[in-house]
Image: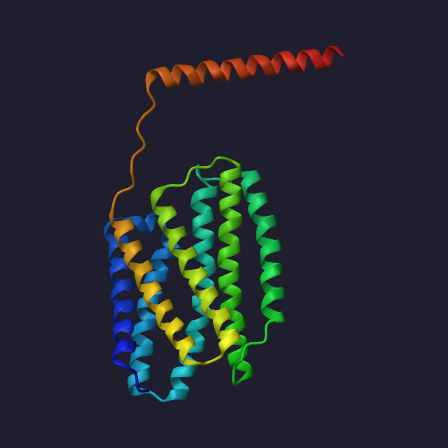
Length: 258
């Protein structure tokens, strides 16, 4: 396969980005909280170097087969990152918050149904059936990433659950990448394989490298430690809790009398 200098540059940048991210996650022990992200970084580094070697020493058919085999893993890891984000945010004490899980699951099921319907309805301008389903698959995962992230965000905000810095960085990166992929896939559906689409494709690659750099910096830096509550605030919260319990007891006794 003949690759341009820009293609080689983006390939090298992606490989180095995944290796650097993996290094940061291991050295800073972030893998303990984000095991899926760690496996994703290792997997993508392996995929990048494998595809590069196949493109250099194998046939075009061998490259296509290898690309499609690894593509399935990409989709699974994209969904896995959404699960990892929701696990950290909606499971703050080690067990799932029941109301948050219910809201997330319901919204996720609805979002998945919408994504499937939209992807089946579109008709990409591809030259083969396999190409059509590739575009539909990419569009589906991009829709699903955005929708599941919004569902998880809604569940967390509705219950007042706190976002922590590292998981926020992961979520922001996933959402930025998914939104960029969504725009690129929709452009592909409208424009087909045109010069304009290749510009968008390169833009998406640069966006992904930027996301990797953002993750590397974010996961290297320590999370901001929340300032401890003052004694006055602790006393206020204890008094407020006691007052709420008293009011609830009075309401219950009044209801029992009636």
